[in-house]
Image (cartoon, rainbow, N blue to C red):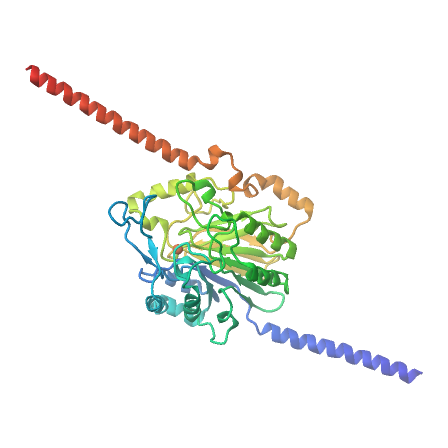
Amino acid sequence: MGSSVAVVALRRLAVVGLLITSLVIFACSASDEPLVTRIAFGSCANQSAPQLIWNAITDFDPQIFIWLGDNIYGDIRQPFKLFGKERTIGPWKNVPRFIPASEQEMQSRYKRAKNNPGYSRLRQSTKVIGTWDDHDYGLNDAGKEFGGKITNQRLLLDFLDEPQDSPRRKQAGVYSSYTFGPVGRQIKVILLDTRYHRDPLFSDGSILGSLQWMWLEKELNGPPSAITIIGSSIQVISNLSATTGPLFSLECWGHFPKERDRLFRLIRDSKRDGVFFISGDVHFGEITRYDCATGYPLYDITSSGLTQAVEKAVPPPLHFIVRFVAWLTPTTMRVMGRNCRYKSCTYGEPNFGAIEIDWDSTPVAMKIEVRDVNGFPVTGVKTSLLELQTQRIDSVAAIRAEESQKYCTLEMNLPWIVRYRLAILFFCTLAILLLGLIGLTYAAISVSRRCLHKYKFD
Ligand SMILES: [Fe+2]
């Protein structure tokens, strides 16, 4: 009897020993994965433009760099022509402003981008991953109808050094996910493809397509990670077009409200903490947040572009107009703060995104910034993994009571006088200028008539 008890005890001891050994081995092998503390990201890099910003990015010394699209400008832009036989602009345009380039042309543009000395230097020390947007997909604002997508998928994956046997080369679209860092301190990066399956603009159809949705559902419901970064080429939270219409429009998830609701619902139902978005496309940088999607603030850090930027499109003396318009445009989601370079908390010159994680602080702290060509922050947010956790209902209610007016009001729901104030100002200014011009013409005609009359009389 006594010996059988001893045998059982010994067996239990052996099992416990085995468990401890396996845990130690697991912990050791897990800790082999280096801790990730610095990630950079960017978008909109014209291969023909000077790309000085790589110096600031390499100085930041990121362990990972994420491309968010327009990694090259692959399509061909026709000249801006308002009048004439071939008009590329205005409601009367009769030829497209953008046309796709040949495969050889795309390849040579990718080659130029890849051989850029600054980018080459970054690639030597940094893991580079990425997705695409319209201009490297092959055509401005294009979606699932674009015929060159299969060829261009191969060209993008070649640019990103995707292994030849990677399943990513066999699927329809370039969406992908990565997990970095040791267990317990893992960062999952989910890169979406917002082009390959996207229905026509303003259709309120699908952005991701059914297969990508199934994949995303699996990714979000899969093993937990401390941080989950979702990379989307177009903005997820900000729907600026709702307030800039009918003057101009920007692509965003807000144009597909059902699809965006589905994304928010999926994140909420997955009960995944520590999720935030990064995005590009718009040629300026900003940080937005939405507090009514999940039980915690959902941030979207937009960095655009590495070379392309709205202020570069106008002469320097007119930069103040761009900044004024940015300040005037109503936004319910933009994170405003005293640490922004400009009052609007947008940044219309070349920029990149920088994420820093302090794993040693309690709670784990994160600093996410948009930085300029010299590496200086122009807007940023400090948060923690505690803040990005589903809160208890009462604390959510407290947050909402404080900030609901700002971060829970969709741009679409603003009173029309606020929502369209940019257009109202524009058309009022135009009307005043027109009236002034008519008045001046009338005065000039009256004066000249009087002079003529006087001359005849004399
Ligand atoms: Fe772009």
